[in-house]
Length: 325
Image (tube, rainbow, N blue to C red; front, side, top):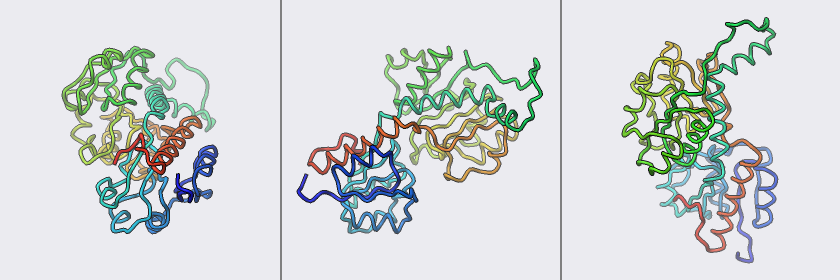
């Protein structure tokens, strides 16, 4: 690195070990209050720092990125998805963009399985009942859910996380796995998970009891689970989303749940986070989590250190491993 240490602004609070690693290599402005930056603050950060370590809560769109000029030359994003960054505008502004893939695969896959268990076995409802002091004791017909083992699971998106979910579901719960993705997976990847490939999403939907989404939010995938596609699922099917909230048309989802057409939903992400529609919060057959997919100490630390490595590589003249734009 140059004698003058690059100046990095960090937009959210990070695990202590990550902040320490940043301070070891850079001049750093941290965010100990963990307050989300405004658009004006993001513009000021781009103008004043050499690089920005940002997160999915930062709306780095054209209105923020253009026009410059910017002092910053890199956006090191903490997370896999970069739908919060307008990659075309970033290129126009001369900003390189990186993400932090690989390290959150197992964590998110584990949470996906947890949501499947919670929805089918009605675990959230049961805990709320007990905490409210309304449990009157065991009876043979009380609070019956549905068996998880042997169900048919549909997976949309067969990247790292989709494959990890399929492996857990097939080997751990004997599930039949159906898969649809933008590109046809390698035969070996399908066989490892006991999965069969469907050429189209519409062909997959009628045959699954549980549908789990694992695709990025793009112009092509936003709203992909709309009223028409939700209606293609069998009556009583369960929808799981640990990917991005705007993959699902939330009003259509609410209607499908309220009508009884959809049996349940397990949601870790929402279209307008942190806002969650009141109708979803009021339904007992919906499990709601506050975007916890990668929320373990181990994973969030690994994500942060990966972002730091991308910054170190960039400012030392090397190509960052995780460049996405």
